[in-house]
Amino acid sequence: MTRPGEGRRGRASGTVVRYVLLVVGAAIMVVPFLTMLSTSFTGQAYVLTIPPQIIPNPATLDNYAQALGTQDFAGYFLNSAIVSVLATAVAVLLSSMMAYGFARFDFPGKEVMFRLLLLGLVVPAMMLIIPQFVLAKQLGLVDTLAGLVVFYVAGNLAFNTFLLRGFFASLPGELDQAMQVDGANAWTRYWRLAMPLAKPALGTVTIFTFLSCWDEFAWALTLIQTPDKATLPLALSLFQGENSTQWGLVFAGSVIAVIPVIIVFLVFQRSFVQGLTSGAVKG
Amino acid sequence: MSSIVSRRAREVQPASRARRRHGWIGLAFIGPGLLLFLVAVVYPIFGAVQMSFFHWQILAGAVSEWIGLDNYVQAVRDPLFWSSLLNSGVYMLLTVPPQIVLGLLVAVLLKRASPTQPIFRALFYLPVVTSWVVVSLLFKYLFADQGLINFTLHDFLHLMSQDVSWLSSRWTAMIAICALGVWKGIGWSMMIFLAALQGVPESLEEAATMDGAGRWRRFRVVTLPAIWPSMVFVIVLLVIGGLNVFTSVVVMTNGGPADATQVVLTYMYQQAFKNLDFGYGSAIAVLLAIIVLILSLIQLRVFRDRSEVAS
Image (tube, rainbow over all chains, first blue to last red; front, side, top):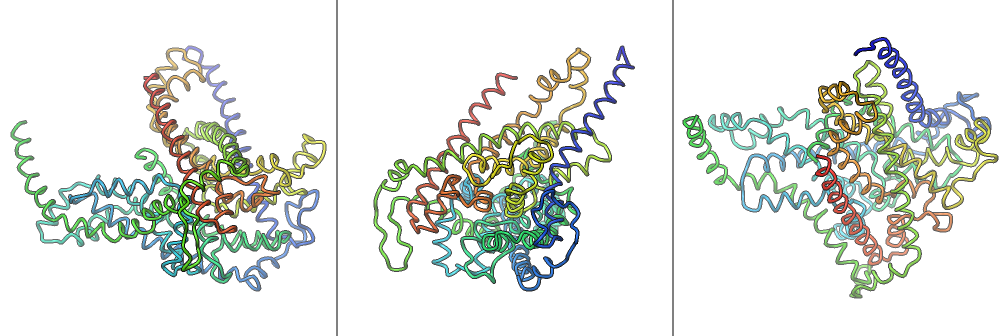
């Protein structure tokens, strides 16, 4: 305050340092993605050359044509889309119902049930993969997309319910009671009143669930055995394992897998931030 | 004052009685989800513990043999189990501190609102939303013998006298796997810290500035205690996540060369789904869960004590 000139100079140089650090950091984050994009347009003969080609010359669409044609990445994309959309819809519906039940009603055993649900937040998913496989085998779900959907829904219930319950509990109970006086039954109050008001929280939950399904690998690796039922992450890893040098094709498939994620992320960035921070504050 | 309270009490009472009377409606809302959760998550938790005491037979009709603690004894005597545990531990130790320090650094740099802030935030967060398989393939490519990492460090910056074959020996491969872990995770810790930093009242920092506190001291005395709960949250979750490393190892090295980069979960997976020893795999899973639980409890105890000392 007493030496404003020095303070301003310090702040200006601080801003420069700040931007240099941020730009370097952001470059490190982005360069791998650009490498992926560039390689996906590069012919097999020009992959992994020294010095690396930043802009592929000659550029080619062959990798994409091959990925979508002979390699059936369109089919894997469809599998991923079906599984992720179905699992997300069911998971959001079931967990919002649970959250509403926990937030608005009292019943015997409520505390125990909620504690049980919290168990699902603590136990790492990978620890359950062996008994879940045995269970899926008993239920006849091995090598089916339905088996993916069922366990993706189950795996997302705990976190979603936890987050949504907090939101429902914060809605004023008077609205609920007013509708009840008007003769609205519990389902109407949940579907017509609570759900529309919970849109921001539902958005967060929907995005997180969709991405966790879209990106999931370990369970798909375990459950799916015939190639035409593979989801994108599984197909990519299997393809690279068998054709270890066809990087152009691998990354054309990767770009196809990543584009929906980036679109969802950029469009719903605000919900992302909200969801993460509310998770941090309450968790 | 008292009349308001009593009126509110009168209003609340019939409502809560109604709540109890309609308890079955609450159960109906919870029922479908809870049933699925019990079958697909809770039952397998007990299943894992149960299976770890058996010589488990996966074939239909075959009888599994109860062998008590034999699977656990086998784990303790298995050098590969210990080396995989060491690799997981090394991964955790090498990825958690950089994610915290760098995530916090980026968050501090991005704290002040500016037109470029959302762009940088999105760029740093991009790896977090990308699938583990895709980024693992990407890093396998970058760390290939003729990849971008060797080119940058050897031909471009001359930091290395020759190319390193990163993925073909244990510790260089672990470095590559850890580099991926840090790169993918910074955005997540940044986002949590960013939210926490925005909750720190500016008046506190201004007061510290008036008192003549330098930038570092201001950070240590004002900012750090204010974001401490978020810090504990991030540390605990990163430690759990670090010990759960799986996909990046499967894709980048598949545990090789010669099992040198097996981590606990890839080793568990190999035992269960390649050797079909479900009992031994389950024992390894249970051991890891116990380790994670103990570490989490220790951390919560230590960090709570420290925050009490600080306040």
